[in-house]
Length: 199
Image (cartoon, rainbow, N blue to C red; front, side):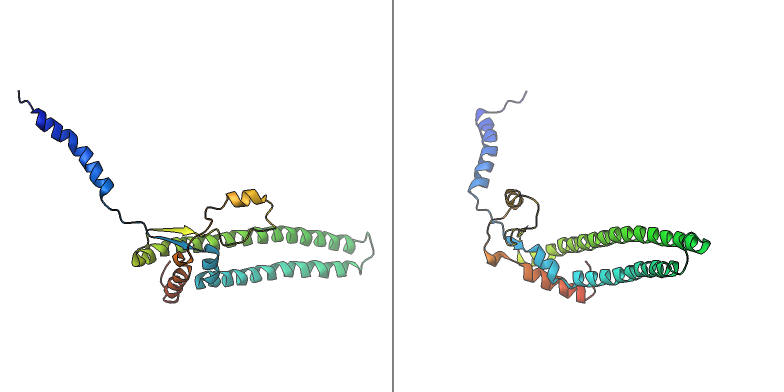
């Protein structure tokens, strides 16, 4: 049976410790950090502006349908004034008014939900496009990590949460403005959008 010498055993035991020591003393490249003002990115992106314009046109078309139901109801109300109460025409017109009022209420609820859904889709799409666009910009500039700047926006007085909760919801107190790549990101994404590139 082959026996290992004490010197060999000592050497084998020392290898992991030497590797750990080497890792500790070898200088590591510091991470390059950047920040982005997400609110300013949303406001500056042509892609998002185009999405908001499409949403406005969509809502105008839907609002026209609502206005048509409203006009129908108003016309029926004017017509009902020409009939004596409790007559067949008065009762029939009243039924039509109630039907129009019901359709109007349902449509307004539908319109509200549709607006909320479309707005959420737009914001989600823009946010995903921002995340998808960052890797190329970061690789080009040698950036390792990007933080969202939540220190810049002022506290919202209309926010129902107490100020302490608003403060605890933030993660950044201050950063060097030279680390801000917001404008570079907006420029890069707008150029890609103008060229018809995705995201």
